Image 1 (spheres, rainbow, N blue to C red):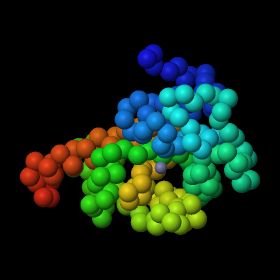
Image 2 (image 1 turned 120 degrees about the vertical axis):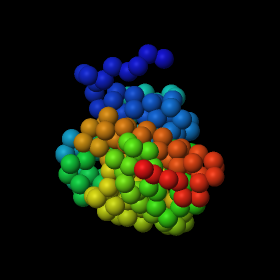
Image 3 (image 1 turned 45 degrees about the vertical axis):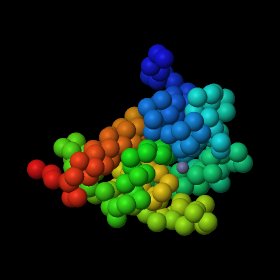
Image 4 (image 1 turned 135 degrees about the vertical axis):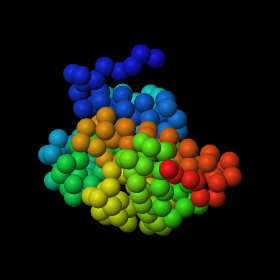
Length: 198
Ligand SMILES: [Zn+2]
């Protein structure tokens, strides 16, 4: 598959490209996760139930940041909106279900990457507990509040939320953290109860 050309892409084309990249690189399954962009006044977001392999730019929804998301938006749209409202620097919010990040969230209180790059970017990654039964009501406030002080956070058993000043930065956080989580998991499997870090 040819890499997407995004230099002159519309917000809709940009979101489709990044949503597909998350799927292509194993950071989401066919229909999981969601991505959004914001220009400070308007939000663009993937629709609920979107298939990353088949999504087209015409299916992306958009709405004013000051208003509630329209019907058909991702169920996480209120969370994205709340993140932009509390953190004006955020221009992109990505959500993914990286398997190693998720697995570690089930057995850890927080995650401290042990590789050089991971420790540099995310010295301390919070894991939030949000009851599944009340997720849509509680997650927007809790995640958005946490993302004021962290580039990303995990929700235990669910997935990763990251924000960026650009879509590329949000993608970088998701991709880089999954790599760090993979390394932590491997180090534990290789016998280090508490992996060493120089
Ligand atoms: Zn999810």
